[in-house]
Each structure stands twice: as C-alpha cells, then as structure tokens.
Image (cartoon, rainbow, N blue to C red; front, side, top):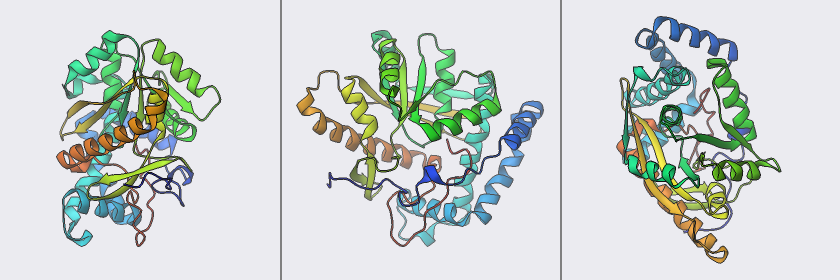
Length: 323
C-alpha cells in the first residue's frame, strides 16, 4: 500500500472545474412537470435522458464501462454491453428525478427501509454529534429526507464551496423554501462551523470518494485496482474526536430505497500521535465497505470519471446534477 501523496481521482482535468451543464431554468421546468403530473408519469422522460447520455456522452459512457467491468468482474471493458450501460445511466437519472420529490417532502411516494438503525439512534442519544461518510453511491438526499422526518436526527452536509454552490442552486430550483443545511468547506471559519454543529448534536455528512484539487490522498485497493481516496474527511473526524458511520442510500428500482449504516471509526479516544494510523485504517475500511455495497447494487455508482486513473482512458464529465 502506498501512503504518499497522489493526485485526486480525475485530477488534471479536475471535475470541480468542468463546465456546469445543469440549467436552472430547465430544472425548474422539470420540477414543475414532475410535481404536476406525478412521479410515475414523469419517469417516462428518464429513459430519454439515459439514452442521451448513452449516445452523446462518450467519455461518461467509457467511464461507466470501465467501472462496470471492475464491479461485475468482467475480463474486458468490451464485455460490458449496451443494456448494462443504459441501466447504469437510468439508475442515475432515477435518483436525480427522485430528488425533486424528496426535497419537496413527498416521502409518501417512497418505500424507504433503514438497516442497522440502532447505530444512528445511538448517535442521536449520545448528543455529541458525529460524522456520516458516504459516497457518490445511491442517494444522499434520501438520508436527509429521513432526517427531516425523524425527531432528534438533524443532518448537515459539509462539502467544498464550488460543489456546495451548485447543490444549493439545484435545491433552490427544486424547492426555494427547502432548508438546505450545507456547510461550504475551504473558509477560515468552516471548521469552527462544523465543530459548533457537532457540539449542538448535529450529524455532519460528507462524501469520501472524491478529492479536491491537490488534497492528500491514500491509495487503497478498490474493486481489484488501486484507487486514491481523500484523507481530509477522516482527518476532520479525527481532529474533532468524533465517531464516524458509513452510510449509503441505495436505489432498488421502483420507489424503493435501502439506507445502510455501518460502523466505520471512532476517533473519540485516539491520541494525536495515533491519528495518522487511525485515519489510514478508517480509509481502508471505507474502501472495503464501498466495494461491498457497489457489488451489492452495481448500478448505483455515480462517479463518471476514471476512478483508477487508467492512463489510456479519457476523463469524463460527470452528468448534470451529479449527487
């Protein structure tokens, strides 16, 4: 295992600096249509969106093929067929579409099942705040929806400023009255704000599968090849001496989501001299859990770029509104 510095996945043509393809006007139009005609009828449009990316987004298509080869244990990328690629893009479009209803508190439309709920219940009861670290796997919005309807569970998202701006704009287009609860990282007072939220018993969610710019990363095995994962989210939890849960909200087709919680790390009693080793152990476990749930629900992975930095492949632009 290489523990040195590595470029972030997608670095060189950093995903945060690519042109923003989402259009707020059309997002508002789609939101209006979805809320007026209902979820079932408006889902027809998703097939056209998936077909569009299948035909006109070759870079994202290539990255989908590379990922599906890894997760499905196929010998070559060419073994990934068109139906598999279409299913991958359709799953992505479905999760984005469902965000319209979740942000507008239309929970009755969904069958949301929570696994290992006692883990999150214990965090709420403790009252010290904690971290949830997820990934671009399934829907994080479905967890925030559960947080809004479950007494005592308050969730805020911490993310880099540019991504926070895009997410805030998208959520405002979907529902201007929605309380977004997003902390933009990268400011002098960002860590203070996160610390204050934790002290107030808030659960802070972060995504641990993308780095930003020149962030330091740790190279770990993931789906049979080395992948560089960021140290930052885990270092923050270690410095603030908080427990960490892994979470993912997997889309299971139809209207069903499965939310899974797993114990990831507890930095509460880790001394300063032991933080580096504890952080590396947490990242390694995170990669193993991420792999486990990718194999369980392979079409829920929404990192449409070369996660393994394969030299011969091109970088992909993530589809609009990547969660």
